[in-house]
Amino acid sequence: MQETARVFIVPGLGNSGPDHWQTYFERMQPGFTRIEQRSWDSPDRAEWVETLAQALAGEDLSRVVLVAHSLGCATVAHWAAAYGHRIKGALLVAPSDVETAHYAAFPTTGFAPMPLARLPFPSTVVLSRNDEWVTPARAHQFAEAWGSELVDIGNAGHINTASGYGDWPAGLALLDECQPPEPLPWAVANPRG
Image (cartoon, rainbow, N blue to C red):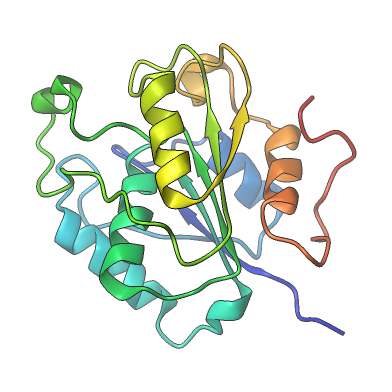
């Protein structure tokens, strides 16, 4: 019998509040672990990557699944580039483009340029066609470069609380799809509904 996945939530800039889908995932699956950064409002790439690496130290990486949103996706890409570890998989939702002027208004350090090397593990990028933090073309570029499956969920904003993504059972289904072969215990019937 295979062991179940060990899921880590990787929020982006500002963390994910109580009504965010990442928090919903944690409520639905209390075994999920949130990566807690020291500074959510002035992220430093080296620090965020090291925090992720420390959280995964001692884990059986063949069981690890990362669930990242926005700047959390950039953190995962930088972690993969720095460490090259193979994990079970990653769900990368609304990866923000750290190379745009949008980030000039926020005190982020070291996230640009976005790593474009193939990820050493299976991954799925979820994109919205009207995300203010990344264009569809750039999200396609990330997915192609990373070797990720691409899931387009239409006009969904930044796929966050402000866009109506709190309770997101379809996201849990996408999580189940992104790292076969064993079905995860929280899977729901319609992954894109």
